[in-house]
Image (cartoon, rainbow, N blue to C red; front, side, top):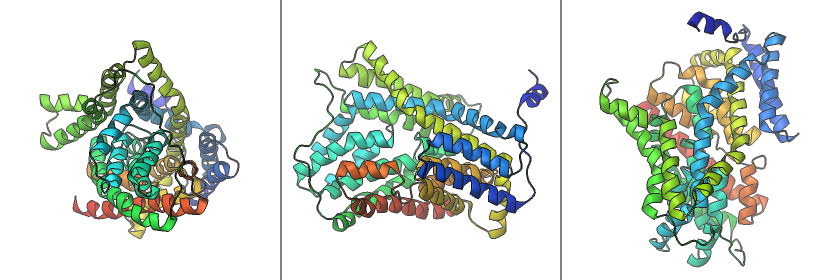
Length: 463
């Protein structure tokens, strides 16, 4: 099909409205509908985002027969760009969990840590495991380990619990291949390798402050927490063979190294025709890097743990079911983002930002903060904020567009409270009251968000 035919077949963009006031009302009403549907009516975020997108298009003045055209286009583009990566990340995480690789990492690090270094060791374990694991899976795996370490080391639960939670949360909000950062990278057309490198750079000091350092403050605020009489740890079934520590670590870090290698080659070699750069561009692309890690994990995790071929296949298959909801939420967020762009919201935000001289990084962070507080979902906050500020990324350097991704990710973590499923997950696992959870988990999330943006803003001025 020729290019003119393709353009003719594509759904036309929604008409831009000329009234900034009407656009502002449309955005506020759409976000209000999404918040109401998620928080009050307990509707699934996929449905809430779908309905909110229709409200946005209708109020902005889109023709009735084209209310959903932008949503469908954005949904397809986002799922095609991000869905594969989320699926591969889930496969790697499931192999890591079922093979006992997570326990191998934890046991090896803890065996080499003194009592005084245990909080730092828990932060390190959480950060390493947080690379391939989704937040909820990481919590389920790590909390029993945290309880065990607190009991054996005679430490207050908050002293080791907060560093573990901080490690998972920082990676979840700032570092690909987690869904939020991936969607923001796709929406802002940022370079994934650069985003990964800068995300790790920001994540380390943020984790130090929000993890081991804040843990001492949280310990005083929350007070002593009772440990359960029996600490249940999700051990895999007993088997003769277990993965080796070095092999597990190499598998987890392989996609990170490949993507960072691509980003480094783009800076150092900067010649698209050079063979080394072409090779690194291929193996360092997110799809190939994660696919390589999954295939390697089948050997270093699955086969090393004694899994049969059928068991490995079953493990990979079971990893995809739980992420279906995440993929649909991400796709719906992409549809909402495309609707925002097509009705002209992005252009209006660009105009307001220039008029008011507001930093794009700060604006992205603030928008994500507001949506996070309203909806409780870091992923929804990231997707929506990325859609609103996407036009600001046009013409940005790869470094600044990556920093904008990180600013939005930092804002999406701000003050998790009672409308966030993660809040209740942490509360129940640690046996805390609502007040204690607010003083520890919620404040920790806020510390992560504020420290991260405090590092991102000056970095944007320097690079």
